[in-house]
Length: 117
Image (cartoon, rainbow, N blue to C red; front, side):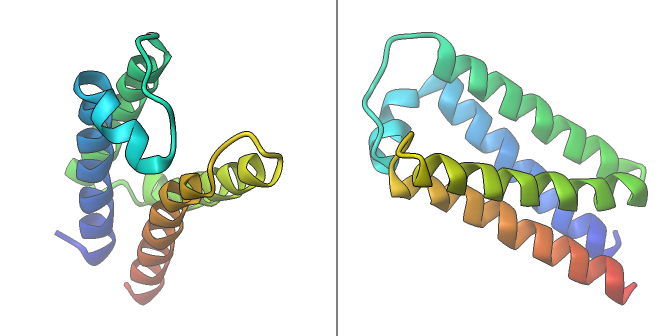
């Protein structure tokens, strides 16, 4: 497996695990990031979408799809900018940026690995 592929694999596993947590144990995870617990379905829907994104990442690794690898860099930068904006606008706790920082670090890792290969 290539170094860029490894970065995508790790991020895909992170996404899949986060998705499963939001589907099955959202009220354990939400308070950690300063959100109220909920019985509404929205968090599980977000978890399902996150899990599906994780599968996309894992599928991209299987075929060493470097075009996909590059596209994820932009998407993860947009996610970081988006959650940062949500915090600035007062729509969420500053801890929400932690999710964005994971994306930012993953994007940097993938970018550096692609550049080096």
